[in-house]
Image: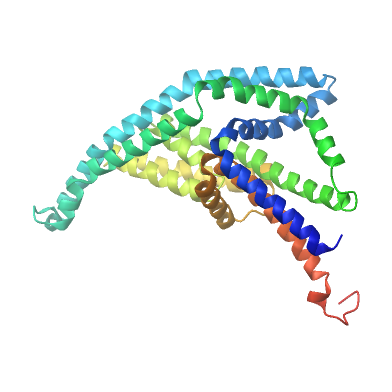
Length: 353
């Protein structure tokens, strides 16, 4: 079949797939979540099989362990995180008031009643609180609408269990449907995509978890209010290089300045915590768990998250990283084909040109 015809067929298939993804929207959310979790846990199931367990028992053991961990997090961590987030929102007016008082003491001219700075700071706390509450309520409403109790506790675990149980069979059936002429190339590309996703999602997910736990525990240990929230934010954003440390560190430093003003030892302790976290992440965790061959540039990640989030909502955010990684692999393959073509080498170029 001519290349142009093949491109046309596969292009139409890609457009139909994206349209179905957009049309179904959040209906497919539990299935996307289940597939992502099953993909992440498949190597563990394979390892348990190599140790002598059957696939059913391996899947059952993983499911039971995941259920215990989830229940423990839901009972212990989630209420604390929710309460600290609410308290942080309530404390924003007081933080803005302290900022205004500091400005009045430091730069008296800006603290005069007619000063533009004072007028701006006067309503900043309530404005921040109002906007934060609106955002928080919107997130809660969205989560309640999209991830209800049935989806969270029934559908996602069931989908994950069955996909994990039949993962190897599903992969084999997909392989059997590949066009025979292009099957070797497709398998090679799929293997490259799998390596990229495994390095990034599994490795970076572990890094985010370790860093988030470290920041949360360390900040709470020194007595910083809302340390758990700050650590969770920093850990969640760690998958974008430097963004997690900058956002979390800036937020933690701002809170430390208001809480420990005058007691600079604790302010310095916050700085040391984030410096130590960056040092360990950049020199130990990321090289060991993620590696250097992922090939996902931070700018490309941010663009993918923004574009897919705007187009497909929360489901788009879930599929943004896998799609970005896949597109990166396909782009590198296309560039290799281009460099080996006459378009790049010229009509009269020899094989070593």
